[in-house]
Image (cartoon, rainbow over all chains, first blue to last red; front, side, top):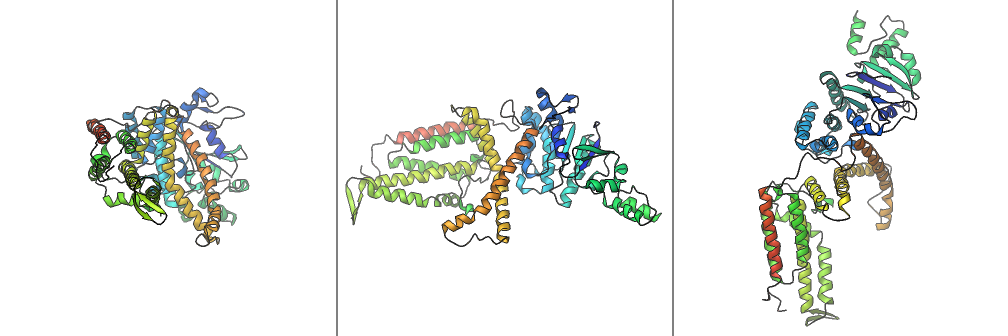
Length: 248
Length: 273
């Protein structure tokens, strides 16, 4: 498996398929028993590289409450760069910049428990951004959020990838979140079983269902319509595409 | 119930006292507490009262708010007063059945009560005027000068700030678990103390399990953000000692010395001994 710089890769798989294990391997939290994990040319097994790797490949976790350390938002964003030993003046600048990117400047002096789930998750993202990584791994960041929080976080992630050229590895259960990804990797029982463009992956509705995965709603609808004998493309991903396909 | 505890709470007003360096405040409070136990006549307590009153006025914290903090200690203070009043041997002033109030007892009881009240007021002024973050930073700095503890100064400070961060989170969680258990028919309101305590088990166990899970996840998240203890760590906000702080430090040293000097006064106030 290889991930390019600036790419948006979606990773899906059933519970226990190894998604989280993969994300922890990439961040050098756990180490491979076989083979090697290389992050921008550095082997995670090499202990000297540990901190560089964790700084290069930042990680956002599922539970927004359990990854905020400090009692004040801006202090939390500063936590990463403080650990890296960045000079105080520069930390200040990085924190302001990171909060601006996730559009949370107005909340800089708030307490984390006063924020909504989506806002907490954006603060967690800002905390990673302040470390100036090249790649961010999102380990089901939207799993515990309500629909509006999910939208906030997804917009932030997409913006990072598009405007800041950030490499994004997005692990999720929500297929709609990755229809716009550059590439999707499907994991099952610790193995890569499918890999390719979203259209190519979601077209294989039957195979995905066998692994226990869903497809985007519209793809499923198209699939059902096709099996009823309706002539419709099998790679419909969004509502818009569905409308176009039906109105032809 | 928890709302009545004012010790350890932060009451921001933006006053001069709030703006002082936390280190100055911690050092002064420590010296002040030690000094309280040296005072041996009412002149000293009078001076202490004046100092505390001035600081309270400067801090712009409502006096009622501070007095509420003493309320929680009324029981302890009463107990101390009563015990000292009757148990101190000396010249009898009044007899109440088998109990005798002595002049010495009266004196010791008054001193103890004042001492306790000033102790609570003094320390709560510090926490009321210092934000938890400043307090933690200040304590980290102060701990660096205590042998044995200095090695763990950073870790202790980090523990304190994580505790502060998770208090509201765990309170919410407790509430949620209580509601969930009530929905399943648990009863927390009736019964004697022992059965009530027993009824808390279905709250405490889920709470502990979740706290451990949170701790585990937080530790992973901290490591993922390159946390590796206090070594080579920098801080965004640094404690800067300004002119205001040097001035207040000098003033505070003078106050402490002043308090000490009151112990030399030979003229009795109220008590003839």
